[in-house]
Image 1 (cartoon, rainbow, N blue to C red):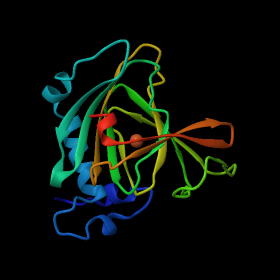
Image 2 (cartoon, helix red, strand yellow; image 1 turned 60 degrees about the vertical axis):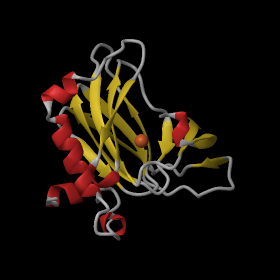
Image 3 (cartoon, rainbow, N blue to C red; image 1 turned 30 degrees about the vertical axis):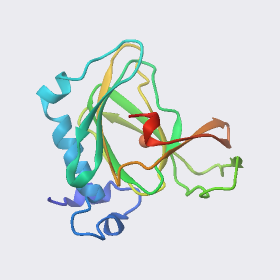
Length: 187
Ligand SMILES: [Fe+2]
């Protein structure tokens, strides 16, 4: 796998070295390379069934045992706030445009139900077709299709495969832990 300087620079947390502790473990850059290639595969993107009422998913074979998904986003849909435990990941918009809101802070692992965020931790980015990002462990975000008329399609990859996702609600600066989802909840 090639590791481009641009891909490494786009990682919020440069934990690629951590993720490559075994020879075959894909790095953030590997995952970003994979999702970029998949997003550029017009035939693959066209194969995703789209539903105007809700998001659609197709599981892909990611590199090095990673978990990968092709996801369709009708206008106005989003993930809600969540994190990805110890997994690193990458995603890229294949068509349409997605918005990512993220937190530049590491949340405590457990033992809390609500916490108040500092006022300088919010980050936002818009990802038009062909644009993506990688992220490190403990990344917290929500991804949205804010368009009122266009579907969006994106490709995502995670390594290790997601052991769980914590879901949060947010009211201003207050983040509340709502749910912990296990893989059987979304496969
Ligand atoms: Fe996510």
